[in-house]
Image (cartoon, rainbow, N blue to C red; front, side, top):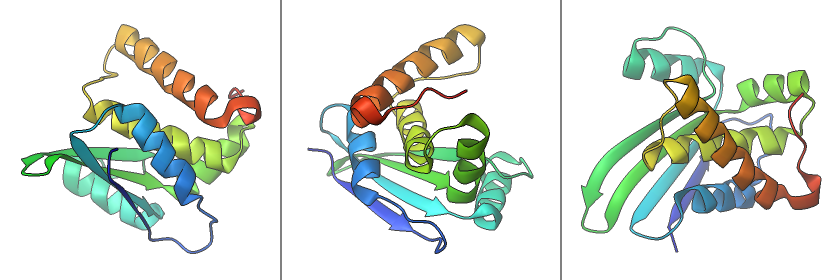
Length: 144
């Protein structure tokens, strides 16, 4: 089983760590990797996005592949709770589902998926939503 660590660095949101752990494990599949998930606020996400990608704005998710270690591959996924909250309201989905979507998306990037072209985006969205439908089962809501 993939080791997953969740750090919540925001206070005003209720974060279901178990859902985020399950989302990461489902997106990454088998073993051989570990993932660290950080749930952050707008300011920290903007700073990380600026430092990592030179984009001076808040984004939903950043993912980093830190390469191999003696324990296996090491991934880091950073998700922005306030961004997820705003998007969840805009698209009529539960906050927990939107935040899990970002974890799945980041983990799919770590496992080799890309979304630079329309074809890649469609394939990644299909994989992402399939995982979320399975994760949330009867509680899954399709974004409006």
